[in-house]
Length: 106
Image 1 (cartoon, rainbow, N blue to C red):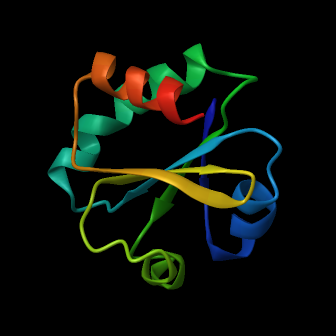
Image 2 (image 1 turned 30 degrees about the vertical axis):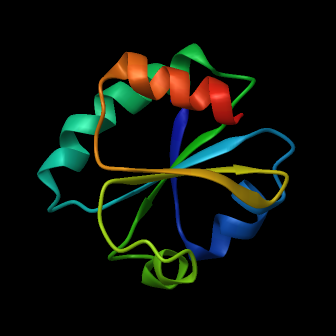
């Protein structure tokens, strides 16, 4: 599995301390568009394995992280690189658009 679900306790080590770019999928179990986006992100995670680390955060379980990064709607993708936010994409998008966004921001 190339896309890990993490929580608040793992955020620093998994995302901020990562030596590779990390797109974080802020989502929720009750979010329909999040469920539609999930298989697309899993495909992209598999295609980019080794160069980009994809993670998922449930905003209901890790609300502190969502609040820290001002995530107010889901799905929201936030690209982290070198411990800093580099880009943000709110809402779903087709796979080619997301693939381009990942290439441009990683």
